[in-house]
Length: 469
Image 1 (tube, helix red, strand yellow):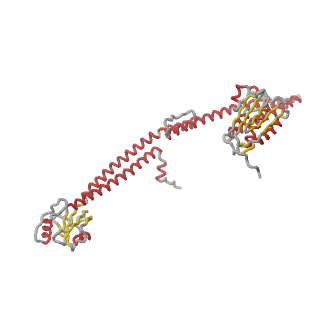
Image 2 (cartoon, one colour):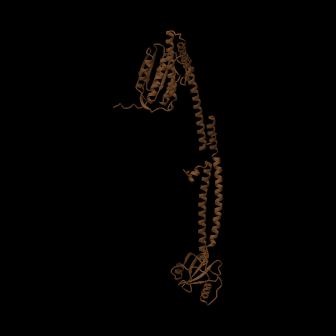
C-alpha cells in the first residue's frame, strides 16, 4: 500500500508549536498588509483617475484653434500641432467623421461621442484604445460653432498606470519586508513566551526519566503559564506524598505481616519436625500449637482483608451514597459484636437518625469501633452504645488510651504498645476514619469519665426516605 501524504493542514500540525505561532503571526500580518495595500492601491487609482478626469474637463480648447483645425480638415487652411502638451484633440462630425490634428493618433468614435455631436448629450467621458494600441481617457464636449461638431480631448492612461505600477511594487516590497519582520518577531515572541513551557517540558522529561518528584518550576505572575507551573508543582508534590505513603504502607504491611508469619512458621516447623523425627508432641502442647496456628491464620486473613480494603482502586472515592437508617445499621453491628463478646454486657439506646452514606462501608466502620471496644473491655465488662441526633458514642471500661497516644490512633498500622499482644492489624480505625469522612462526618476518641475510652462518631442528617409500598 502506498503511504498517504499528509495535506497542508496535517503538515502544519506536524510543525513545532513555536513555528506554528510564528506562521500564524506572519499569516495574520500578511493578510492585514495585503488588505491595506490593496485598499491603498485602489484608493490611489481612483484619486488619480478623478484628477485626470477633472483635468480633461477643465481644459478649454481655443475656438480659433478649432476653426483652424476645421478649415485644415476641409483643405482650406493650415493648422499647427496641438498646442496642449500630452493631449490628443480631434473633431467629430454629427455623421461620425473625424478631423484629426497633426501628429495625433486617431481615436475611435463611440456612440457617446455621436450623441454629444448631435446635441443629445451635454458631454461624455469614457476610455478607448487608439490606433496605436494606447489606452486613452477621452472627454467629448460640443463645439459652439459651427454646429454639428464635437471636440474630443484625450490623454493616455499610462500617465496614471505607471505611478500605480510603481506604487504596487513599493507596496509589495514594503509588505514583504513587513511579513518577514512579523514572522521573525512572531518567532521571537513564541520563543520568549514558550520558554516556561520548555522548562515544564524538560521537568516532565526529567521526572519521566529519573522519577525524581522533587522537581519544582518557578511560577511567577498570574498568567496561564504560571498557573500551569503551579499545577505541575502541586501534581508532583501530591505524587511524591502518595509515593511516600505507598512506600510507608508497604513497609508497615511487611512489618505487620512478619510477626504472624514468623510465629506461624515456627509452629508449623515444630509440627513438621515431630512428624519427621517420629517424636510425638504431648497432646496438650499439640492442641496449643494448633490453636496458635489457627489464631495466626485468622490474624493474617484479617490483615490481608484490611490491606485489600485500603488498596482497592475506589478506596479514595466513596461508593454510591444512599439514605441509610443509622440506627438500623448500628443495631446490625451490635448483633455481630455480641457474638464476639458473649460474656460482655452491651447496652443500647438508639434514636432514629438517617444519613447519606455507603451502607456496607458504614456498617463495617461501626463494627470496627465495636470490635475495639470488645477487645479492650475487661471480662464481664459493660459497653454503652448511644445514638442521639446523629451522635453515636461507644464507651467501654477498658484500660483507656494515654493522652500522648490519642493523636496517632487513626494512622495506618499504629498500635498502642499496650495492645501489641492483642490481635489486630492497626488498620481498623484508619478505615473507620476514612469511611466517616467520606460520609461528611467526624470521629474522635477520648478518655471516658470513670475510666475506659469513648469513641464518638458524628454524621450529618439526611431526609427520611418515604415508607416502602
